[in-house]
Length: 409
Image (cartoon, rainbow, N blue to C red; front, side, top):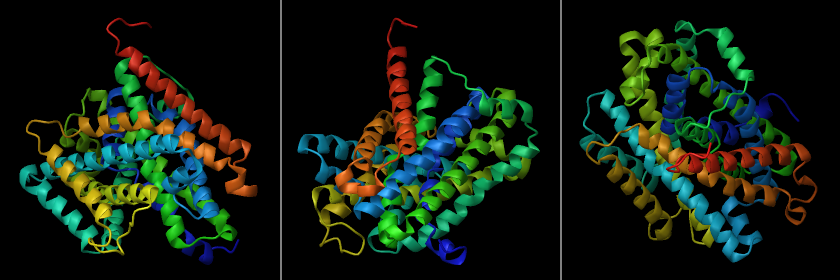
């Protein structure tokens, strides 16, 4: 491996994929978790999700480099039709739900600047659509990514908020659990917002676009690991900040303004502005990436022409999917009186229901010797991916049982 210059030039897909996971839904979920349960959720991120995200991202990148194909195409080719349809539709549903929810993040951010969502969201939708269809979204994407780094401010705010570090560090290594419905809801949402299907699809497809070969597999895996570390570090500090600033005062996160209060120790009266800019950038980024990724993976699965290099006339289904998802996101976010934070968390709870399906297909493909040859998963990759799949499945079952009229616990 040549290092550092040649290596740095090849980094990107894994880091961007993991960083984009800290979108509107992620910020809402992590802030709510810290505000409601203090430090007690930190073990989920440190012990469970940090290594799991890295492993899942590595598996997806290995699949892409070794096979030279995207996840949807592999599912279509390597599984019986009915089974493949389950996987493809699950990916479509998971990505569509999150894509639509990002417009709630845009509406919440605009709310902080006193801009009516009835005016701002439709304009934002048209801007995102225009950038994808007739503009250059890849160039603007870099700007949104830079603006999204505003959430590094949570690191500074966490220290200024004077958290009880002893309790925080203890919570990181001390698993706790509850069968309470609200706890299970946030447990599932936290897992699903950290490990989301679109992150794996993006990482795999971006690796292919970058043209990485088997000789660069180690570099690509390093890229995935670094991205996962960066992403979960930010997530951990968001929880710590909310636990230090919101939890002691019993603040319930219902609006973007509530969430913005966590940055008050650092930004003071400008906390809402700082949070609003970051939330808007993160939401706009995801509002563009998700419809694009969803349309590409869906068209890839069915062998339809896809890609922004084609015109609308050349790839009508591809662009129609993008248009429909953006239109639905705009429409649902404009429903009068609807909470702009709760739908973000609810979207990831639904995503958590579908996550085990995606991981199942990834595991099967990664252990297919005919497909992967000597690059089949090793024991560590299988164990970690399998464990997270089982944990999410059990959590979903417990959540459903907790909703029964008569508790069985």
